[in-house]
Length: 71
Image (cartoon, rainbow, N blue to C red; front, top):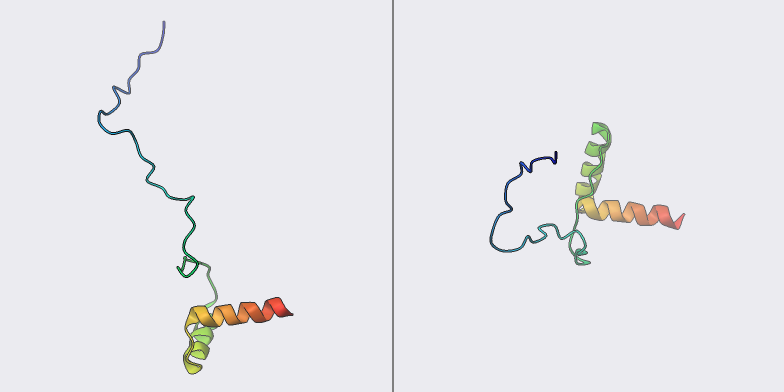
């Protein structure tokens, strides 16, 4: 005996559209989230250093990463 379909009929109307645009790359100047955790002492020191040198946190991170890559 075949199984009975309990899902019902599909909705009528427009065909389904993809709501996820995961194939589109963000523009070069657009920022994307980068989440990671650091110890509270490091976070405080990083923020204070950036503020004392008039830098945004992301700019200080980029400068540090660039310096590390040049080693």
